[in-house]
Image (cartoon, helix red, strand yellow):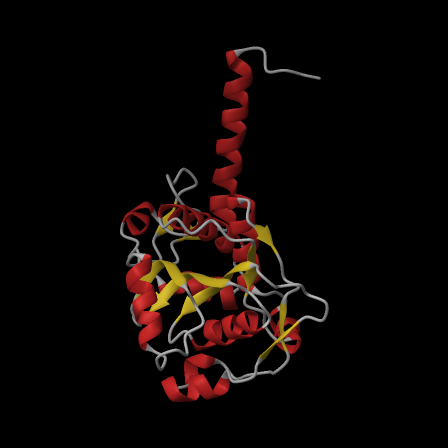
Length: 247
């Protein structure tokens, strides 16, 4: 096995890395998803947003406020979620929404890993790591064919790798194709998500705790529908974690 034996070895590797990054900058320069400014390859924090935008990420409120907001969207007794946390708090015209759009529609899959790691740190701060399973909100098979992947699946896998909670995509499935929630008002969102999810045959959810993962929380109708199905199958606790809360 060869070993680096001198300072010149390090200098050569460093020079090669700089040359490689300079060439990559020339061929495909990177720009911040939020402000569109150029991102150098020696950025401190992120491959997708500049240092200034990273420093100004609009972090979400604590889990108690997120849960209260979640519960406020449902009649008393209709919420199936015990606790909820989010990484970012996004306004409609915020440039930070482009992070979600890049993941969801432009196939910037690496954003799921980068911001999933940040979400994992948030869950640690919020003491939300004590779950048996991390479960992504499933998308319909037709939508998976259209998009090629499930963004919630990517986020959930990152959380599992980072936290040690077990990943599972074989508990629930989406048997009903639904139109995008972004086009609907609150009451239409609830109606759109009725009887959408089912338990996978043979899945043993009794007495399990489950953390549901999604990209964005708006009214919470999607997550609550999935949580209700899990609770009806015997889950003792269902939480929720998302990259962003949309206002």
